[in-house]
Length: 385
Image (cartoon, rainbow, N blue to C red):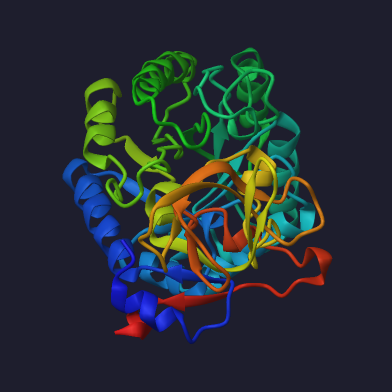
């Protein structure tokens, strides 16, 4: 929750900007780390959620590894001090250049998403005189009950290898002298709040790993990816993701054989609630049927509402007056540049400070200069004390 003292400090800062509550980030990491230590699990933070330097430094200091989905993310992880032996690299379209760079870095594992990719990694590793450790990203055909743009585990999605391709994988692995096979990787989607989905995933993992074991291919690692959602509706009242319940479901439903290690790739659940996009009201426009609060932050700063029709809680930090209905919009020349329609918000006026909450994940990292707008800078709670 943003404090009155912090709001006072915001008055002298040019908007829009991202405000990061570092205390909440550390609180979230404390809870998360306690859970993975309890069960002996391993975690790799998904850099795509937020690649802000101060954020990832804090996460690295908690001992997490890095989950990367591009060659530049691998480079960033190495440059930021993550142990290469804790870096995993996924993505359906890894280029030869990116694969070579990851091999040179000595990363822990490539999460491979197609049979041709395995062959190319083997060929490139052979040419470099290296051995590549890989896991197979499996498409388990599970409906995560989330937005279609962030569902990744259905058979019609582009991600992963379906079970009907396992025989081809087994035959190729037997031929690849420069591949070391580690295990299986899964990721069924993002912003999953129906936790029974993860119990279903665990049961499916057992079915799928059994195929490999029965065909004489040992599974040393099980990587269940990420996907745990956060509470966008009530970020102040429910600021930390439900890690205890999540890991209890995993522990009770996942069959872990002797010697196997279990990995996770948290992203949004770690950083989502610690970030807020702070903006000022430029104009209050009153029509016959609507009132518009026009902010100086736009879809170029936080694209999720325009791209996913995502809900973010919106708060007027400058007013505690009676609440009225506003369409809250941005300045970008697109009709989709809308933060929310008919939102009940304390009566506002020009210059009021607004907070768009739960913006720590897929916010600043996805920002762009559309309309040649400046990129919003970052402000940290540690610097306002």
